[in-house]
Image 1 (cartoon, one colour):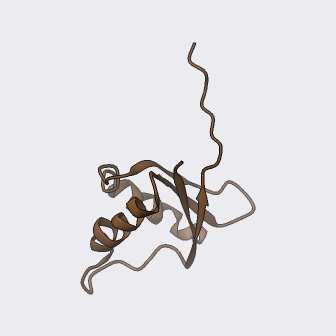
Image 2: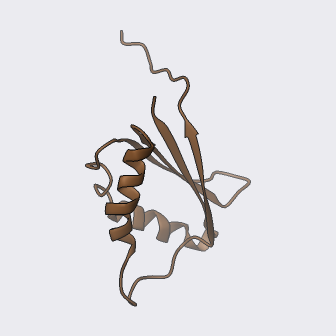
Length: 105
């Protein structure tokens, strides 16, 4: 089964719009990666400043290949790179052991 990586980004209220615009501008950068299955950016509604960046991958090897290739290249840059919108982050890793989808009518 698939693996899930959730990047927890602590984003102050004044940086939320910046973060969301940056993710919107990167649309398409992960979707063509081998082994990529799903992406969601989850905005907090109440009780936290933490955004969740949810990605699902065929396996750990596919995720690591993306991390060492396209993701690494996208995050390297010169001195003109903008300041991060998040003040901190952590990555959670999970294996999918059960899943369900809506029944087709």
